[in-house]
Length: 285
Image (cartoon, rainbow, N blue to C red; front, top):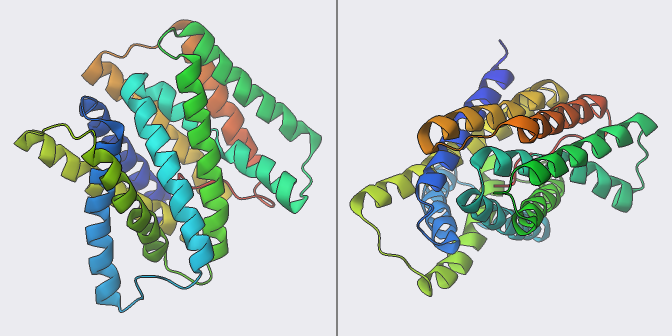
C-alpha cells in the first residue's frame, strides 16, 4: 500500500470521527461549533508555522483569503446540515463538490469534457434527489444548504490550486482558521450555549481530528496521483452511514440508500474519468 493511500485512508477515518463528534454536539449552535473547531485548529497551525519559520500571513494572500472565506462558508453549511439531517446524507451531498469543481472549470477556464461525463453529473444529482425524495428527514432547505456547502468547497479547492506553488499545506489551512475564528467567534457570542466539561473535550477533539485529517489529505494528494487516491475518500460516506446507524440510530433504508450508492458511484466515476484534466476537490472543511 502506497504512502499516499495510507494518508488518504487516515484522512477519511479522522474526518468521519470529527463529524460524529459534531453530530453528538448537535445541541450547540452551528456558529459555536465552527468557532470552536477553527480556534483549536488555528492554535496548532500557528505553533507549526512558528516552528518551521514560515510567515503567518502566507505569500499568495489574495487566493489564501478566497480559500479561507469559501472554506468558512462551506464548513458552516456542512456543520448545519450534520446537525439537522442524517450524517450519511449530509456527507454524501457534500461529496458532490468534485462535480461543481468540473462545472466551474468549464465556466471559468473554458475546459472541455467528454460527453459521457455529463451522464455522471446527471446520475450524481439524480441520486441526491433520490435521497431527498425517499427520506423525509432531508428537506429542500437542508438539501440546498448541503449543495451550497459542496459548491463553496469547490471554490475553495480552486483557490487552493492557486496557492500550491507558493504556500505550504499547513499555511493554506491556517488561513481558513484565521478567517473563521474571529468571524464565527463574533457570531457565536450572540448565540452561545453553555458547555459541560465533556462537551469542551469533544469540541477539542473536533478541532484536533479535523486538522490532522486536512493535513493527511493534503499529503496524500502531494504524494499520489489524485485519481488513484480520491475514490477512497468516498469510503467516508459508508463509514458515516454505519457508525451513525449504530451510535445515533440514523437508519437509512430503501431507495434513499440506493440514492447514496448512485451518488458515490457517479462521483467516483467522474474522478477516474477526469484524472488527466480536472483534479478532484479536496474537502474544504
